[in-house]
Length: 296
Image (tube, rainbow, N blue to C red; front, side, top):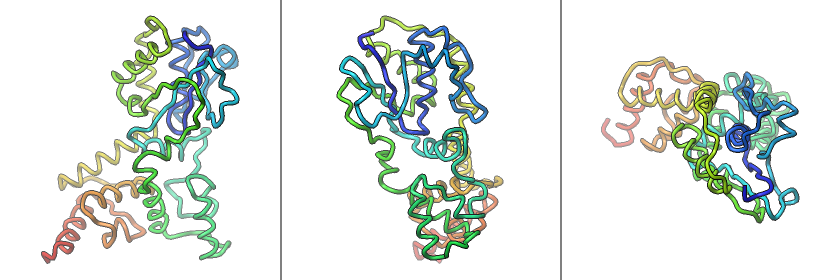
């Protein structure tokens, strides 16, 4: 390679450990990378000691250039799309431990609101307005808070996940979107090989099997696909059971705001109990659109 060392700079939830593993196995041809990297949570955090010692590619969160030398290079995972997937994975499996109980966030609200994802300020607001003895909190309030966080400008333009320090060495950008399309993933790794000065790389069909497992165990991607299916059922006026966690509810509401200009006045925004059928939600949207257009 043209470089002495290669570092993978990434934010939590954007698959840095998986890319590290792929690079060490198929670009660096490490014999110690011939293992299954997946934990039960779907993260690629299984890393035997001999693999860690032999790595040519190392992932981490590099906030300064103290570790990076002049003849090194950086692969930077950037969020070009699918920021919801990154947020979801960050919340449910960072360090293989869920940061939030998305199915029951409203119960024991203060303890559930950990000091991540901006919840530190929200906890202070809850204590100031409801007192430290607060246990349960209306689900609608928590849903609205998650809606505001997901819909904030630095989420919408993905800048929340694309703030990196200038490390003063050549950088190869790796868009998160390519992880979810196998053809694009293989192509991007091929381009990375050229960036590193390698002639060819050790592609094997085993990479496809690893990618299938990566996708099957990817909680954020599964939630994204679930929301897409629900929205399609709503838009086609189909009846389908609607059972979501609170982050999925907030994400669907963001779509309704963007698409129909609806911000409140329907149960999915104002009620603690989210609609249980897509047809029910369609009918409330249809009625609110008529009200907004002064048709009723």
